[in-house]
Length: 137
Image (cartoon, rainbow, N blue to C red):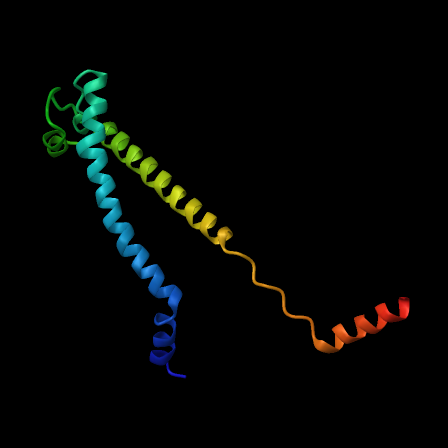
C-alpha cells in the first residue's frame, strides 16, 4: 500500500473529519470568547474596580516613564504586562467552562439513548423450557 493511499484512508476516516470540523469551529468560538472578554467583560470589571484599563496594566522593566500606553512601553523596552495576562486568563476560564458544559451535555445525551433490545430467545430453547415446565407439573 503506497503512502498516498494510506494517507487518503486515514484522512477520510470519520474521526479525522470530525476533528477538523471541531478545530475550525473551536477557532471561531475562541475569537467570539476573545471579543466577549476584551470588549464586554473586562471593561465592566475595570469600571467596577474603579475605571481601570486592564489592557494597559504593566510593570516597566527597562525604566520607561509611568503613564505610557502598553504598546509604547513595549517599544521602549521590556515590560511585565500582567493586565494582558489577567485578560487572557479570564478568557481561558470562560472557554474551559463552556467546553466543560458542552462535553457534559454530550455525555448526558449519550446516556439518554435506550439500551438495545435483548436478542429474541431461539425457538429450540423456548421448546425445551416448555418441556421442562410440563415435566415439573
